[in-house]
Length: 268
Figure 1: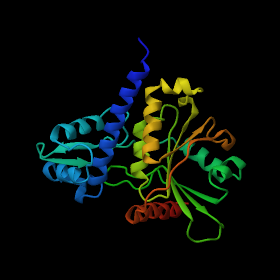
Figure 2: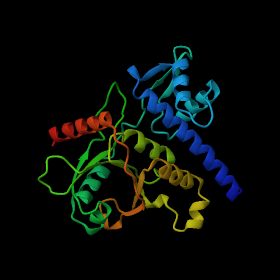
Figure 3: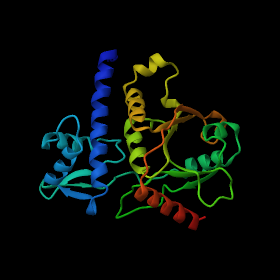
């Protein structure tokens, strides 16, 4: 099979990024709607009210819905309902879990390793596994882990609250960047932590990897940070590939994240 030329990779990446961006726009509106559902007419009106580049029509919306059902898209769950008169969002994220991964990352985060200290400005850390909390009507809409950062451990409120999407090998894809962004609403910063097996060793090789180019571009656009690991349980093998940017204030989202932490504390 012919390797993709640079122009082919760039065009493919641009197309993917546009669809990822469109999917996030639809989810942002439906996630706040009553029963996560709107009529097609109202949804298109709200999308166009916020659009600054090109107007939405039914064709563009259907293309976005079609993408959301692709294999491997964790937030697949956008669908036309009521005979095509309405659109509903119900995040279809996996319910299967790998408890070993969540144990490993908590142990790594709980250490006083110099590498973790550098990543998080030496602040005192409390990490909560919330990936199995927050199920609603059979669907999932929360990050995998939440990380509280304090200037002093005895303070009641953290200085920052970071959300984390955790992935094993093969998970450094743009769809998971989008998932991290959507589920991390309310956090100070959002991260995707992934296996460095997905990260080519040279910049030239990475520019020819359409999946990675799309991942990196969307992460930069959304401000999602990227941390790669060689061995998840060994913090010394972690590296920041892309710094996360602070997110805008979202009081409703922050309340939901704090509720998840409260439920996690109940189960400790």
